[in-house]
Length: 367
Image (cartoon, rainbow, N blue to C red; front, top):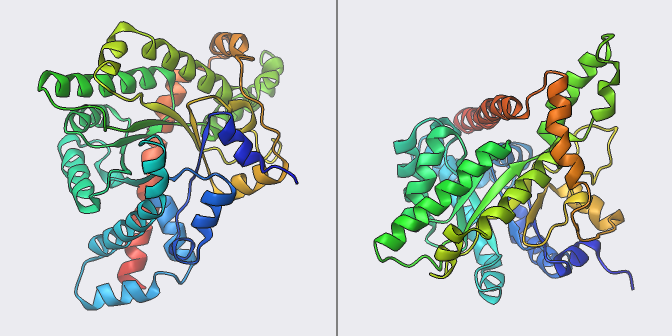
């Protein structure tokens, strides 16, 4: 009998989550089957995912009609649908959460993308969503903008589980890890428990390659940039390796060890945006090289299906790290700064979630 490659990844110590949610999957047993057969250990959602699920399927038509008849405005209708889906999903994963002692079994719900630059409103909405869901295996997604970092620190100090999202650079990841630890330190200083708080840092990958590759392709057309093409498709994986290197540093630092002695759990790295967007690359490009113990890979349905079909999991043992360390310098020689790339992608990421969110509210309003 062929062993499911997704189950093999789980055996190697990495968690596989699904980057999608749709009501029919929660009702027809599909998620339960994936938990059993694929070792699925969690789910993530975002405004674009909900827009796709609600706009392209009829699962929500009856609920939307009922909520509209009650006079609810579009934003409240969307929130009711999202809370219902995420709550149902969290209930399906609750057994895994309990059996893993809170290591897995999480489902994420994101604050409004329009709050990405508003610290106070982000805090307020995150607290409200957390209270509404009232489940220990839920993560509230907060973007890693400058305003979001302040909110993340505050929310962790409040004891709320946080999935840090829209994260594209190693430097910003350092700031995220610092905000996480500072929030926990605030709780410790207040003599509050930290052993139940869960957090992940969602590092987005494929979009890094898209932007860097576009710039490299332009350079190849010039005389001085002809050799730039050799660097195509390397930036995202390199950033992931460098981020993980920083993870190893902070979890072995005395600052973290002091928190760990109080029962604190590490903020795991989660590889996001793992669907391959460039057809020139393997459809499992952002899975196979990133099977790293104590990390998470959240895959869209097509990527998860592809890996189930033809994945060959091997635990990462540090290969490629030297090349990853050298890549920022090589790109810099061609005028490409990965931190500046991260800043651009962050701004674009906020917009990429705001646009479908607005489109969905418009559909609910006029649908």
